[in-house]
Length: 118
Image 1 (spheres, rainbow, N blue to C red):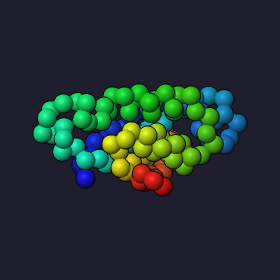
Image 2: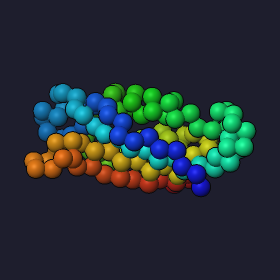
Image 3: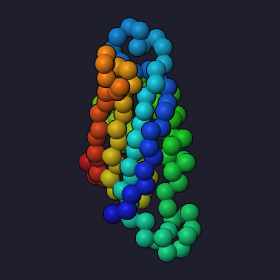
């Protein structure tokens, strides 16, 4: 299986359980790996046979910017579902991090993997 990846996409959204997290958007870092068979596009060099990662990134940005999740787990799950909506994607690996969420830690986050049909 081939992979397309989007690394360290910095987006701002409402995420968290504390009152101050519910009022103000905060930084969220998203990483996505899309597993798909890319043999057709490798042979043809025709974008129509691939996955447009710019469109995927824009969809992720729109989802996070309009979000109001309490947990990064739920946000990561919904991002994975969004990725799996593309018919060529078989598996989506998604990590979501909240930089500065823990004192003395650069970041905290979760990683989920979802497959088509789950």
